[in-house]
Length: 327
Image (cartoon, rainbow, N blue to C red; front, side):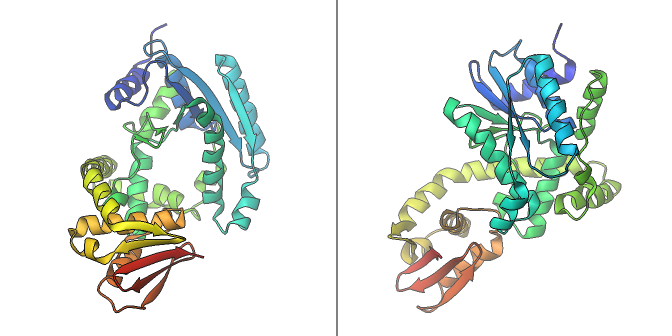
């Protein structure tokens, strides 16, 4: 049996972006939803053209009682049918959210990727997730609303830190059509209709209105992300050089040298300040352009000025430095 047409498009994208190479190990996040089931099938068929090993991981978050057990049973049956090894992990997303003052959505994401890495890292494997073009458009919109820089506009990369997104080029409708052609069912998450979640509100309310204005809105947002990514990649080397000159640790303090920062062009100042913030906090989620600007403003302030920042961080101007610490 030959590879289905849509899967061949995925294969071409994977080869173009260098996402998977012969002999690689790939760990697929398999929720049971349409997107992950589509990627599961495509990766299964692709192995006829590109030999690599494939395993799957399903995370039961301990929410959506009833639905979660249904999804787990579905995924087990799917993996067994195609003879793909599957690991099922059970986590307590509700408890983790309370303990860490996170939204339930964010807690589930953190725990999900933690489980993916538990399987992937010992085998030096890639983690494959099923984000598609609409997800990319929503990410760009979400970042813009939160007040992002160029980095935020770049959205999700096809590959980043060992995570690959082979469906990033594809529309959601193409995924659904492929599943219909294959007569392959999937699970539907009822929380996807809950507009209390910001991303659901964007998907269900905002994006449809944008498509009324311009039917190519999703494609244009995805293209914007791709171009922003290209600029980001171009800036990586000079940004690394700027970081090496300007930043250093002194005990628990991350210090930025005023003299070196003042000599940088604005775009690299922002890069260094942003990196300093997420290096100290350990998280990128709550850091926006306004916080970067707060830090940069300290370089032109009087000594002793101190500001509070997300993630229990503070930044303070002292003599020839701006010093970032975390409680």
